[in-house]
Structure formats: C-alpha cells, structure tokens
Image (tube, rainbow, N blue to C red; front, side, top):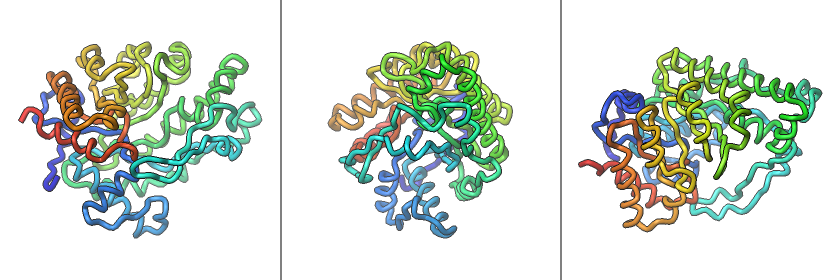
Length: 366
C-alpha cells in the first residue's frame, strides 16, 4: 500500500465487538523472516539480517525494516517478540529433526521439535536449571519500535512461547511431561509456576509502553482431534496462567489474544468465561473452519485470521479469491473479525497468494 492508514483504535473496537468496522482489518501472528526480506527488497530498502544485527545502528535498521513491512502490507498492529527464552539442553536440541528447507523462500534448513526427554526430568534438574533473568530482559527493542511506529499503529507484545509450549518443547519434552504428570505432579507444578511467573513478570515490565495494544500469547494446546493434554490437566496447570496474563492485560486497558493451534473446543468455554480471552487465533479447516467457529463463538469473542494455510499454499487464484470472499461474507457481518491466515505467513507460501488474500480484504464490501 502506498498510503496505509492504520487505525488501531478502530481495530480495538472491532475486537471488543463494539463497532461494525469501516473496512476489513488484517491480523497476523507471524510473518517469516524470508517473507519480510522479500518485501523489504521490493520496497528498495537495504536488507539487514536480524540475527546478524549486532551493533545498535544495524539493529535499528533491521527493526525499521520490520515496521515498514507490516505497515506497507496494511496492518494496524504488528506483533513484536523479545529474545526472552527458556533454553533446552544441548542434547535435547541436538535431537531435533533437521531437514533441507525446500520452501520458495528457503531458509536452508528446517527443524522439528524433539518430543522425548528434555533438560528437566528431576528435582535436581529443576534446581540446577539456568532460568532466564527478568533483570536482564532488554526492553530497548520494544521502546525503539514504539517510538518509530507510523501514526495509528500499535504493538502486540509477546515474550515467550506459552507455558505448555515451554514445558513440552524446551524443558520436559511432551513424552516426559506426560509421564511426570503421573509420576511426579509436584515437579510439574513447580516448573509450571516458575515458567508462568517469569512470563508474567516480563509482561509486567512492559506495562506503560507507548502504543502497546495488547498481549498476543501463543500456546499450542491441541492437535487434529484433541487437546495435547486432557482438558482437566490444562484447567489445573495451564489455563490459570493464561487467566493471570489476561487479567494483567485487562487491568491495564490492554487486549489479550490467544493463539492456540489444534483442537480446543473442549476448553473453549474455559477460555471465554474463565480466562476471558478477547480473541482467538489459529484455525484449520480440517479441525474447525473459521466460519463455523465464528458461528459458534463470534458473539462472545473476536475471531482472528482463519484463511487455512493449506489453501493459501495450494489454491489457484480464482479458487483462492472465492474461498477468501466466502470467509469474509460469513465472518464480517456483526463485526468481531479481522482477516489473516489460519496460522502465519510462511516462507513456503506463494507470495502472490498472500497478496491475493490481502487484496480480497481490501476490496470486500467496496
């Protein structure tokens, strides 16, 4: 877009279902670095690889490219993630599956999380683990992005993968976690609370940042046909922390959006009535099309994204345009909807298909 007009305040009203939008607003969890590079170079800007930006000048240039990409693509808010992370063991990381990345905008290699044995399997591991430090959390990147946002744009902040993701992907491994829930539930509870407190503490530190719009917390809790852990286990260990994150956001006039992949229908009432999420993101047609989700829950929470990544990757232009229009026709009435992918904008997605989705959003209702 040559002259985007971001309007985070209208987006807020749309998400809270207080206003019928004047246009289709866009929403994304993530845009792959390779896609951002593609557009940055299309904008005739010099690309700075974020991982190689070590000095302050190159970091600033890299962040400006990030802002410009989201702005020119028509987003009202961008999601910004810090480097506040929980690190798994070297042996755990070394077991990750590595394969050649054959994507259109290849990153060279692609990895998959090892689900077996993580860095924590005992109380001794728990006591000896090097936990991330809130004192060392660097908020300068957030402050720089905030000061350099175009007028009308906001920030969705995110500091870490969600509590369950940290447990299953980094600290325990999903297999070990499953055993420990029966063999040593006190250890699981201790790790859950430590992880939750640190993520909560990171969110507390950013309260008051100019242009802060809300928290966008990812925490994949399901797969194709079920939640990864039983609903009761999620209610006991995981959802109370999301409730605390949401309350912190709401107490400070911010939104709380949950991205969770997989089947979540068995805990949706908890997420809406107890956690009090403002909106849900991540949809797959094979699990529940976004149009069906909007029909079931769209009068109570915002519905965000939902253009299935498989369809975004595989459909030809005519079929894709009709598919996106059908989603808009069914989800836009009544408000509470923003257009975007069902998960994220990946480096294996045809760029022209991504632009078709945005184009249909810009044209809808006009």
